[in-house]
Image 1: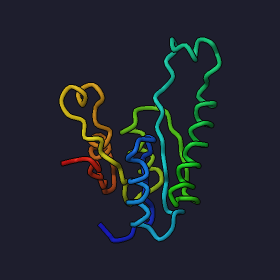
Image 2: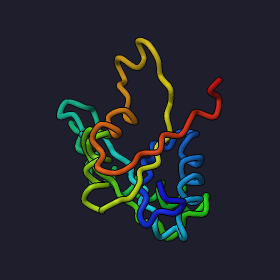
Image 3: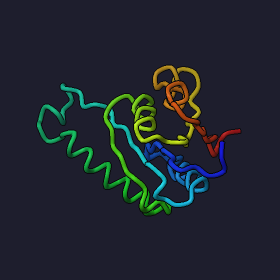
Image 4: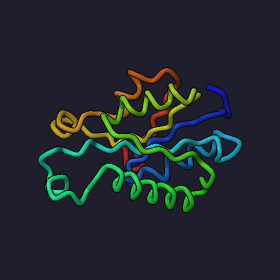
Length: 145
């Protein structure tokens, strides 16, 4: 892996690990403009209350997430990064986005779920590693032993 990368994708889930991922990615690029911050939303279920009542749409969710991504980027030194919102399966969408944008690297935090929690939640980082065309840097949890 080169010391600097031209294009780095950083998946953002708005957890406490997201700023750490941004900081790690910024250390690998010459400028924040080389970063792509992406958040992947789960599809709205046709039976969800927000969908049935008609007051929650994918467009509204995308707008709110883009606002939150902008704020997060600004607060953590990544103003000028490309912001993206996708809908689908997170691991697959992240890998596809990186491929389409010819990323050199994906920087993703690990939540370190184990046992039953991992069985039900899955591992986004693991799926990204399996499907990515480029290198993937998985960050260790700050509270890991």
